[in-house]
Length: 232
Image (cartoon, rainbow, N blue to C red):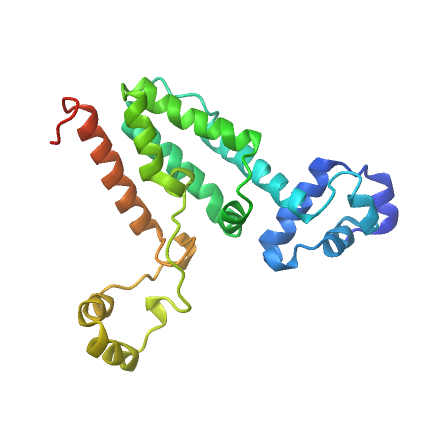
């Protein structure tokens, strides 16, 4: 924890507060991010924070903004790349964003709970639209694509919430399920998620994420090349 004397020599800025908040949440989890704990990390009095950010919600909105700045640096800017067709370009953009979120796995729940559109987040979305426009997708198809992608556009999936995922189920749990939901139990007996380092939520590991993303992008490309009003 920084000493008060050192903190007095280091100017307290909005950016410094937000970066320290991210470091604290990365290390100790989102529940540890309180105004008092953050002030302790910075070596200042809690009241000093309110000059830069009025409350915890302002800090959460700020870390979302900072996260998308990190994504912008990760992808090398939000402009549509000139050397790729739209589908691989958008796939790479989304997977790069996901790589940043995996470094901050507490951010997706904050995005869901806050619903704030930070300026950097808006520019990320604008870049996604630009990639599809450059690829020849109509604005109408792009609009449908945004709805179909949902949170997957940012690199994570909003999954149904369960108390325990399938990796924690024992044989007896599955046997009990089989009488009630036999098809689901049979599937869970064969399918497990065993890569926690690539997981952002229940059932949202890298393999599942990329599978769903590719299905959506393939479907959009098929609609792009199909005459208007018909299905392939």
